[in-house]
Image (tube, rainbow, N blue to C red):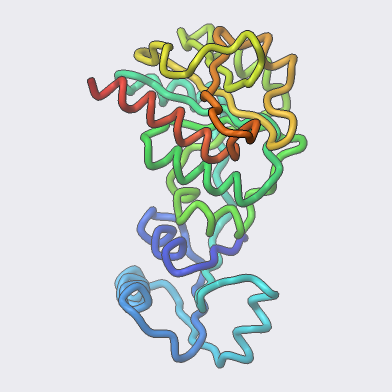
Length: 243
C-alpha cells in the first residue's frame, strides 16, 4: 500500500482506475477539486474519512498533502519485454530511459513531462534510483498513475532488447562527441536516455547509445536541471513527429 498526497494527484489516481483503498481529508477543506474528489469517490464507492485537523496531521508526518491523502495499491511494474511490445503498437514508439536519477522531485517532474509528451513507457534502474514514493507522485501531478514503468537490474540488457526491436537510442550527454539535439531525426522507434543529476549518464551507458545529444548552453552555467533538459528533448521529439 502506498500514499498519494495532494489534491490533483489524488484526483488523477482516482480517475486513472487505480484501486483506491481509502481517502482521508482534513475536515474543513473546501474547493472545486475537493468537491470533485468527494463526488467521484462516492460514485466509485471509495471510502472517505474526514478527520479533525489534529488527527489528520498525525497521518501527514510532515508531508505537504494539501489536506488530502489516498491509500492505493503499490505500482504495477511492467516487464521490459512486455513494455517494448506494447510501445510498438504506436506508429512512432517512444521510450524514456532514466539512468540512476536520485532526487524524488526530479523523478516526479520527469514523469510529468513524459506523460504529457506521450511517452509510451519508462525504464528505470533498480540501483541508485529515487524511490517512487508520495513525493514523486505529488511532483508528477498524478502522472505516475498513468505512465508504464519497467524497473531493471541490468540496463545494458534492456537497451539491447530495444535495439533488437528496431529502436534507435539517443543519450543526453554534454560530452565532446555529442551533437545538438535538434539536428537528429526522432521519427520511428526511439529511446531517449537521461542520467544522474551530478554525473549524467554513466560512461558505460553512453557507449551503448547510437547517438549522443546535447542542449546548447549559452550562459555561464554548465548544464540544465535534468528534468528541464528531459522536457526540452521530449518536446523536440514531439515537434518533429507533428510535422
